[in-house]
Length: 87
Image (spheres, rainbow, N blue to C red):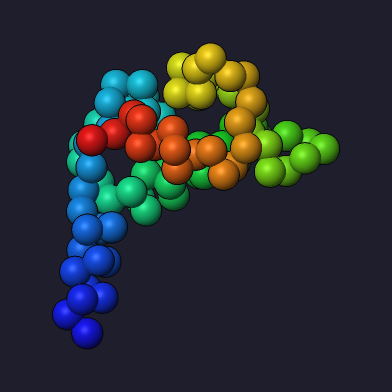
């Protein structure tokens, strides 16, 4: 059982968003799961899911910097982008 909790602890370890991601989710360190949750809240609040293909997310001004150079990314690209914009 300890092995499982260790892996989970790493996953839940706070990471710090850079200024680009921080504009969307805030600048204080938080677990990756919390960053994903806040990103989705922002995407839904601003109606940024593509109307035809719900898996695609359209960039607004803030997400444009996060997605750069793309204007639209798949929901599956979010994890990779978070990795790029948080340490």
